[in-house]
Image 1: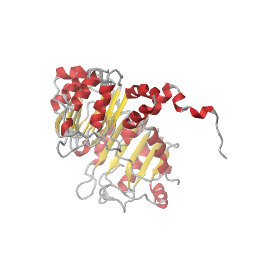
Image 2 (image 1 turned 30 degrees about the vertical axis):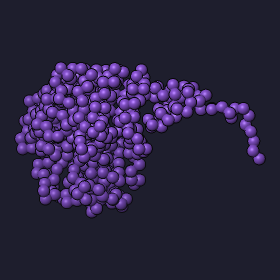
Image 3 (image 1 turned 90 degrees about the vertical axis):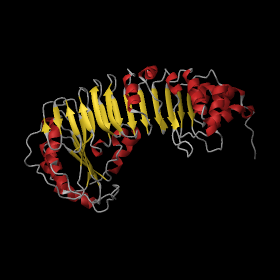
Image 4 (image 1 turned 90 degrees about the horizontal axis):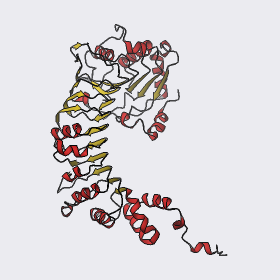
Length: 458
């Protein structure tokens, strides 16, 4: 039997919601969906410009010309404030070449603060060139760009972007001179990410405001000339590319990753190479260090890896966290030369080390000897993590099934955990090797929730 709900059902209850909630609803929709919804009701129509505050020009499942749609929306709402503007893998046709230039000129008049430009490769134009009208966006505080070509940047042009606090460039072609001009003319820049930029001879860093530098390390030389506030330095593949690292002035540097035996490191008056080490300058500010121990072509650990690691640790007398990565390549051998028994006292191990993470643990003898040395000497060690990989199932790409619980129990016996120097040390065994981008995502809430779900219960 049908019932009536009274006169209230005749009204649009959604439209009766407060405007702030309606704007939130519209903002959660794709741009084309929000535009269509705003046509349904006059009240919704005047709210649509408020959804442009954080403008997302993302491709829709519907076949619409997104470039023309964005151009039309900007033209139809000339007074709508836009704080951030984001494109998602946007593809420009030949007829749209002038569109981006027009967008940037328009956004510069709206006080744009955050700009995210992501372009899609096309056969006609492999990389979209970012127009020089970018320099008109003087209110920018954050700039992200990927799959594009950065405009030639002089110091005068870069000075127009002086409010930038964060720059993230990925797979963007930019000249060394342009990048250095950009860095030097942004006096409040705090975060810089440069990945897959093509081959650089040198990344020269002189910035008194920069706190975080992240890169894939695709350059021959990293020269940190004057960075008094730099706290975090991550070069994900520096250890593979024999990067020469020279640090003149970075007194607040706390996080340094990832160093390998192929790197030459000059820190102040200290020259650090695989074959020759002169220790004069220490880095007491370093609290977290990540290193890569390499194998030779036959799969054996490189000669002198024990001495190399110990000498490196001596440069960081206040180190608290140490990440150690080795090859996940299936041909990596169990045996290695070098003795941990002959090593003398290392200040950070004796007095400060609290956490050790073995990123790829395969139960090799040299890994066990290293772990036993560290937990047997570290009086303040709180946690030692073993990210396990089955030695028999690994591939060159580094994927292998988790070892059995029986294997983990056997490893715990072989590691002589009862001989640890700190009685309250926790030993954690994980079912996967540590992900390569751990340092980039370890502060994200979702990653932290998932992190300990891979623990062995043994």
